[in-house]
Length: 42
Image (cartoon, rainbow, N blue to C red; front, side):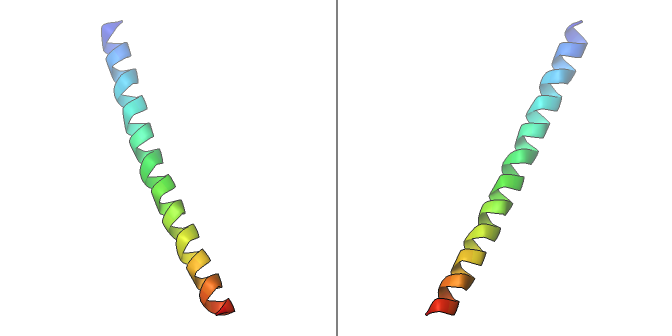
C-alpha cells in the first residue's frame, strides 16, 4: 500500500510540474501576441 501511495505522489508531482511549464508557455505566447497587436496599432 505504501508503494502505491509513493508512486501516486510522484505522479502528481510530475504532472503538476508539467502543467506549470505548459501554463508558462501559454503565458509567453499570449504576451507575444499582445505585443504584436500593440505594434500593429502603433
